[in-house]
Length: 320
View 1 (tube, rainbow, N blue to C red):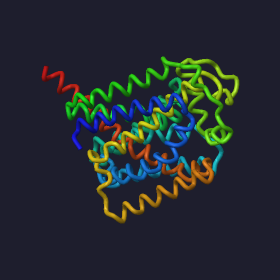
View 2: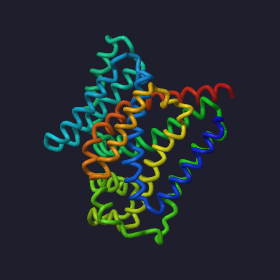
View 3: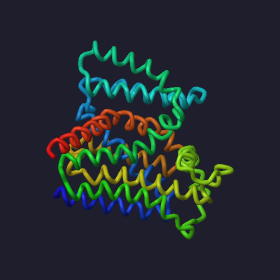
């Protein structure tokens, strides 16, 4: 499949995700998260492993795995401590920066020590917890990081169809906030409300961030204009995040693995979907580690994408 055709397909998938999110945002998100999500986690982690997680050390990824395991274990066995989640996320990002750019362990130890010390200062910033513990593993991961990954590839390839898809992603996101058709409200089922309850904090914080109407209680997420606008954005971002990964199979080549690995991956994916079908909230608990793990293991790639964008833009500027 040609590069231009892949980009055109991606543009179509962006528009399709946006349109569907206007009509059934809650259901679209729940479907994408339960069906597309686990397959994305499994295949991306396998692909990252083949790429050595884009770090300079062979076992660097173990630090990110340990951080993910601590977060999940603490979440289920200890009193809720959301700042622990934020601290471990910041440490993981800073470690990823070190792992991407440094190989000598003497320099690494010095950088890691400075990184840990810096948390004390970052912790005092406004909305530290909201940005790091809520937005970064969720909406920043699926929207901002996906956009950066796309832009980096487009700049390297110097593709006009690819650049179009990058702009369409932003345009569709803006359209969700600018176009607010009251007639597309609908009665959200009790099953959907119950299944979505564990995600509600993200919606509430996004409503605050965008300065939309204040909600009196959580139930208004399913009945208010602000609730529907934010849910459309979340559903759109997550759905396209997964579709983007699968649409570029021929480019990324994550499917080129031994037959045994592919069979195991499919079996684990089917088991994951079965958990969600049996009990959505049970599926969330069972897949919690896998979902967090793929976010943390992707940090080095995110750093490579942003630095790559800087290099490509710098090269374009110099060429002019």
